[in-house]
Length: 151
Image (cartoon, rainbow, N blue to C red; front, side):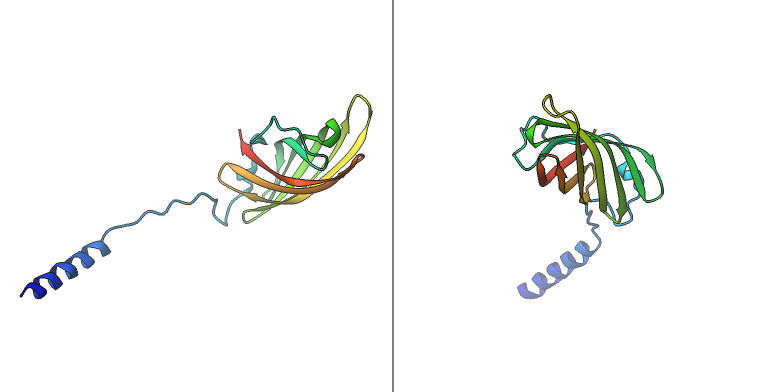
């Protein structure tokens, strides 16, 4: 008799749990993210870091032009050797990845003008973009990963 009652209670519990809804919260945008996800001001999550001899930091991107699948706007960063970089960056959104390029001019008190070209494939989050990059400056190649947060 005890086993029969236990089996009934167990069956009732299983049936009741089937009626309970579960909520799933995700931290990444859906695969159908639109270019609107790129609009806004973006800046490096960590800004007071001195770049290593082969990297850049303090990224800032402000997309001001957009199409259905791309965005373009002003870009700045600080690269190795104290290069203050300023130019434009453009990205094309496919799902939750952004294929991007940046072309800029950099300068220091010792160097009047220095071409900088960066590119990569970034990963779009809800309010952040993880930006792996490679590129060249007049002081040599640079590479790294930067995380930009929407401001």
